[in-house]
Length: 382
Image 1 (cartoon, helix red, strand yellow):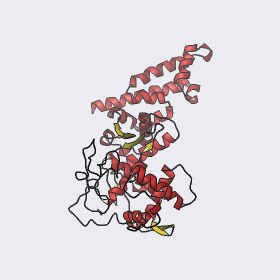
Image 2 (cartoon, helix red, strand yellow):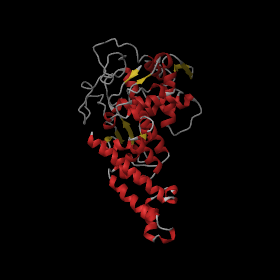
Image 3 (cartoon, helix red, strand yellow):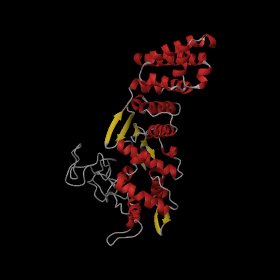
Image 4 (cartoon, helix red, strand yellow):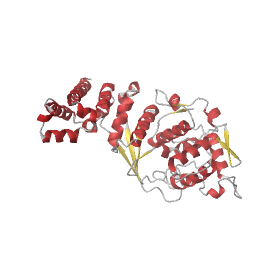
């Protein structure tokens, strides 16, 4: 199975889906290709054939992994068994996140109703059959742009797939996009499942907003979002641009060949807050600077958010001025420094290693400024 980057919603779904596979023990890095695609060898054999038993029901291993990972991610309560975990997460998934895509009534989760099989069986079969050949080749999915996969369940893109931008599944159209059920996009079962992972691709911040870093390559997206998730989890920073900036610094040393000019021009952060979605991006010049391996390495070594913010603001000359002031203070004996000089250092230099060796710190700032100037001038010449 080969997946290619598409719109940001689909991309977030793929990243969320890869997180599910990683939680099941898969080495996701093996699936990420340099051309930006995801290539999962023997997908059906590995993920659509093995089953696990829960409450006397044999459910697809992938369905089981998806539900358990969701429980760990979005449910704050405790549970003692997989059955209990699935019951607790089911309502959140299909009442809160994807309302109506499956019946959210857990009464019928592990027992059939008069008209249909148990919900867990329906869900497992939906995933098991999502790659079946499409019986109507005239229908093309608006997300994967093919007619390859099954069209059997909720095949119009509605608020059941995404409550913010999906069309209304009733007669009233989405008031922003002017989409009604009849005019909505076609979506195959496989892409529907991918979108059911969309929330797992987002990173939740302290103000309850959520972000996703989008790019034209799944390899770039995987590492940028992984670094951002780890970074925010350590509470090093709360600003979106700082999260993106530091993630770019981390990725530049690892994936330098994949950070082409075209890729760097198309990196953006999707910001979701309640029922609003915004887009944030850094100027290309700034991304280009942060993506330089030597600059990124030196910024990482310096480790001061104040310096990073000068780069993010594009105020490169400020780095030189700041370095000069630090150097003038550094060459004085400590007992000769005035109160305002001591206050300046305490307020503007946060890391102990930099405070204890101001001369070395200032030299790093001079080197950083020189590298940035050289980078900018080279771009102008090109």
